[in-house]
Image 1 (cartoon, rainbow, N blue to C red):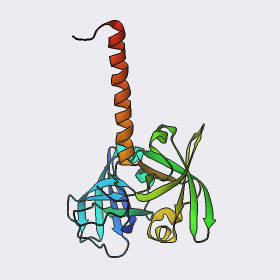
Image 2: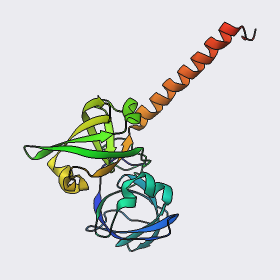
Image 3: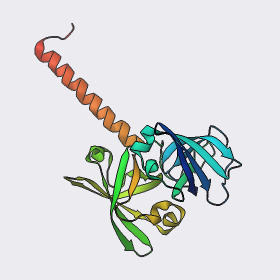
Image 4: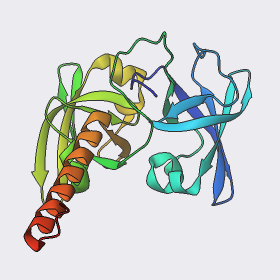
Length: 220
């Protein structure tokens, strides 16, 4: 479990291996503030990965499946690219963002960027299938960064979501390096995901019970 508060940017040192599974090597930028052990979970651009090899915190390696490479932007990484890093939260961790599990729901494309004082108003296009989970003033994780949704617009080609990114976030994360056309990992709010699932289940059982009543199949 994570909070969406990026702790460090990392640099891709290499991506090697077969198509079915690859090893992603990262070098954290600056001194990593927390001890890292084999088996620890770290969010890389919002994707929960397990540390499989390490070198005194200077070099971290992760085994990444083909499924993850295909469904996230990790498959597009090249040596030298920067990524967002966050260690999993503990009982003593400050909870500054929102609940992020590291299970990416899809990719969003940056469509527009507007400079507002020292902040940036960014507009992303998200798949329409995620529309039920997106609401104004709700939470959203983009490349592992916890953000507040300022505006949602439903269009034929998808859902357009606007966020305001403050200077500190632009500096501490890779969001400040994005240009129009770039893709970012999207994870919708966990609470919204469960609420939508509960609504679907309620509708399914309500429909089933109604059918039984009409056909006289109720058990007495």
